[in-house]
Image (tube, rainbow, N blue to C red; front, top):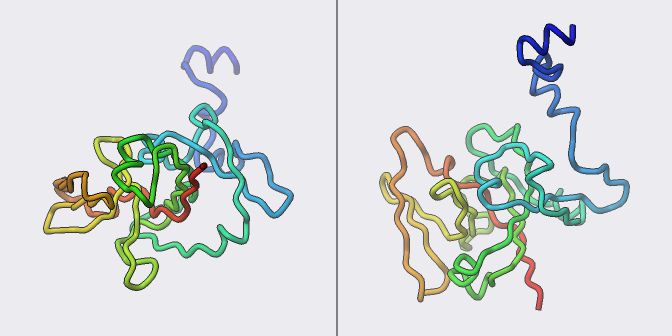
Length: 185
């Protein structure tokens, strides 16, 4: 059997259903206490990968399970296969464009099951991680026709307008809602 697989350039894993493998395999160590492990990844990984592979993990942070369970999802489209929470680190430009809500180097918890423009709290603007040029930017988001309007918090930075591709919706560009910001002082 090994020879057949080698000639066919296959692995044993190629014979299995990838969805079944993903359900059973986890790179997160099981959490036995009141804390949940959340992966820290690059913004581009958060924007483009539904499931995070171990080679893409920078580190693991812990969040209270009760805090994470208390966060309301608001999913548009199919995000069932997406790992719900990831952490990204705001770079210099992203951090300063959202100053004082963010700073460069801030750790940002992204709820990737909240990709709706519906406000989380009435009368408050959601801050989002947004897929832009296959990377990630952090902004307030509005829709104007076929355009996404990306607004910074800091007025010294420009408002950006992105044309949505034909057949795409805002939900396809929203990686997720920013639900926690950690800033070290």
